[in-house]
Image 1: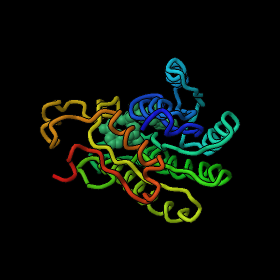
Image 2: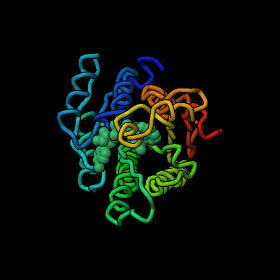
Image 3: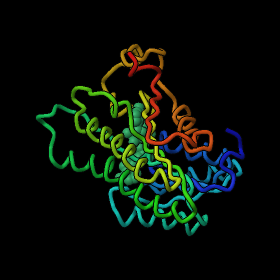
Image 4: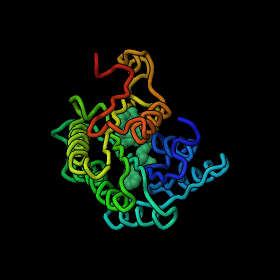
Length: 251
Ligand code: NAD
């Protein structure tokens, strides 16, 4: 990647106010894209925009709850109004869930699926409509190693990320002839706020000892995979899921 890889392109990142989304928005900008980042937290979103502008890029934030159709439609409309088109999208917004299955509530299930599954599905619907107007595009959905394996006491999250994997494959096939590529990235353990919440109570040593490379991943390492999948270097790659996990799933 260099500062021209996405020059003239417009990138949309959901959940861009923190963690993997924030870093990926900044990396898209460094690679030349105009960036729209979305999320529910306006102050944090505007801080990321300011950071991108300070680095010489152009970006805008639009407040969006990906669980709400009107918000998602408005997010894509805002992108096209602001920068004239949409070329690449990273559907990253998501929430975690853990707990014993017999204590899971319907409300928890619906919340996780509204954000992690409907949020991704609906973002793709609106993004693809915009991308078709300029001849195609590339989408990456943020899945997880939890989309590839089962784990005890994480059932709702696991189910939601398996759904993201299935959606990615099927939407990729549906739009392959229309020059729209759809892939997933499947991060392992990445040091973010979400992981801190998820792993509360567990020791860092215990966690890192389970990762073959012996450390947690960084958001930059996921951003690199997302930019690759969105770039022309990956133009024959669609319907796949790139696991970036320090070897954890292989073990
Ligand atoms: P994070 O909590 O920092 O980021 C999640 C982002 O999604 C936040 O910006 C949050 O505000 C946003 N978000 C949540 N609900 C939303 C909604 N309804 N509408 C709009 N935005 C919403 O954590 P992260 O680790 O950066 O997570 C990003 C993605 O990476 C998630 O989809 C997560 O499942 C996935 N992931 C993370 C890890 C990890 O170890 N951190 C591993 C695998 C997958």
